[in-house]
Length: 115
Image 1 (cartoon, rainbow, N blue to C red):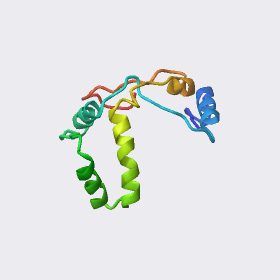
Image 2: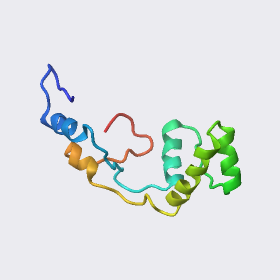
Image 3: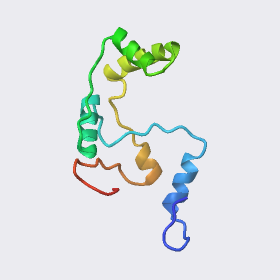
């Protein structure tokens, strides 16, 4: 529940709580980002390099299983990754605005605080 000073409840908080409870929501940011763009934003935020590299299927599967993911689960992740790389997630939704009452804001590298 969103609260302000004292214990007054904000109407937006009540709406968000009601909208979120027991539902699935497809939330996106204000603009679609590629993996390299997301890595660039993470690098700027963390102050250290975060990279993204497309791997061939066999090395990717080996990396996943080497990290402890069971082979059957790892094999299911590969087609998901190819679909994402093919643009399956290249869209935005208005869900964030419907829930919160305002547009999502893309935090620029170097900005501090919550927006």
